[in-house]
Length: 172
Image (cartoon, rainbow, N blue to C red):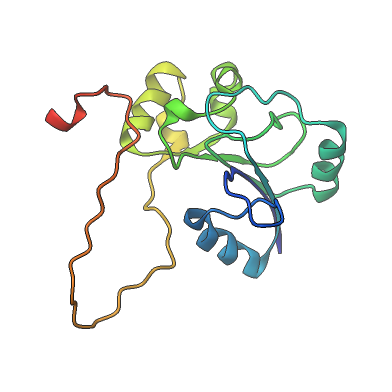
């Protein structure tokens, strides 16, 4: 049984004021919990933030956990490179332009492993000088499975893509 630290932004609160696991992450966390000891850290801070060093009580918890792997969604967590002795995987679910702790990545670009889309991969290589061998692109995870049944209505989703190519990306 591996010990995994997972950290992410979770902006939604339940009626008791507790953070709610975002649906996008729910499946991967539930699957990892089946055969691993998972320490889940959810918080309300998003974007280009420098978290800095963790508070002492959190350092103690992380040291007690002694994780075998850390998964930091959007790098949205404190700088723990000097606290843990395991691989740190930065998994971009949003564009790399929304990543936290950019200065730490720029100082030590190859201290981490990355999962990123092609656009973020290019930014990581060019602006952060990350080796392409440390960046992987995998399909997004989901527990949703299609059922074969008669469809009464088409479902359409109109949304936006997190992009860094500017406001004219739809015309490109």
